[in-house]
Amino acid sequence: EAGVAQSPRYKIIEKRQSVAFWCNPISGHATLYWYQQILGQGPKLLIQFQNNGVVDDSQLPKDRFSAERLKGVDSTLKIQPAKLEDSAVYLCASSFDRDSEQFFGPGTRLTVL
Amino acid sequence: QKEVEQNSGPLSVPEGAIASLNCTYSDRGSQSFFWYRQYSGKSPELIMSIYSNGDKEDGRFTAQLNKASQYVSLLIRDSQPSDSATYLCAVRKGYTGFQKLVFGTGTRLLVSP
Image (cartoon, rainbow over all chains, first blue to last red; front, side):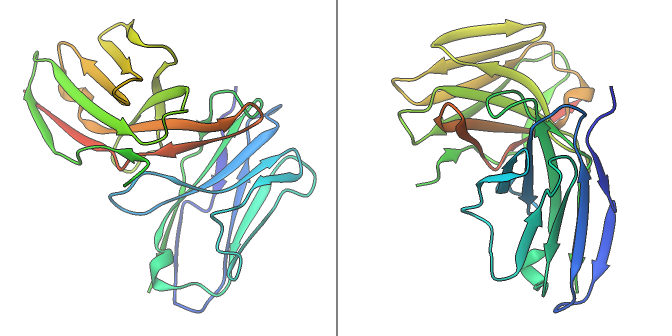
């Protein structure tokens, strides 16, 4: 069974630029999560989708972050404009349903200069 | 007070010893508790889950839960250098269908040969 796929794996941008990350969850998984993990900290949930609907985006900085999962499968997370403090690893995870084990993708390491 | 607290470490143990990792949580209503292992530069991987008071054993790993004290621990017996990683404690909060994982900052474990 293929795992959660993410791209790109690494991205370096300058502040005020925009960036987008892509995630393809495990086939059949209805729930998709985006986490932000700053160096030395645990992952922090940014947004959770159930199929193509948003379940929880309470910790998503909506003035600069946006995410979508239009067809209920893959998802994109966008940052526009980026700030220095956005430097982090962005992890995508998926689960069969909202109460099942979450499987994480390899992450995208973002560096904002 | 942080929702999930862990000592950041590093916790250093010699090969073959027992490593004891601890975690406390603030939400007394939490019902599900997880330990993830994260190797440097990699994504978190679930190694143990525990839902009721007491001990749960899986191979060299034992998770312990004490809801009255709001305390979760992970014991690793016969520690190996390959166990060197950051161990993240996670607590699931919310209610069925609308739950999210809250992670601690992780404890870095170093097992020396």
